[in-house]
Image (cartoon, one colour):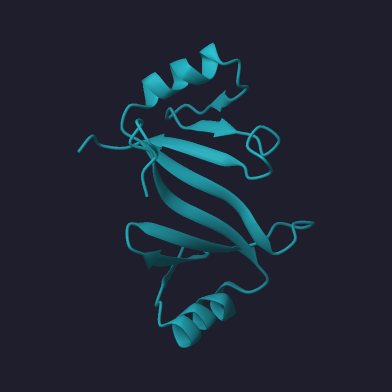
Length: 116
């Protein structure tokens, strides 16, 4: 999936679950979408996007917990966010994080991706 003009794509849909193993089995058995379990999470690929199923932290209800987007020109996107006065945090690796309150309830991570 690509955003118009920015080349933004949807890389991950992050979902909290009660049981990583059971959730992965559900995707495999009911939808024929096999995943792989690594580092305590199941990654279920759908095209170029992955659903990442992980155990919810205490107090986190099962359901979508965030989206990870990829942007080939992350610096231009950051400049646009700054110009528009959008609040965000920047990790040491350059990842941009927007709180759910800024993005209609879904926390966003935006990472640099190779230009194609």
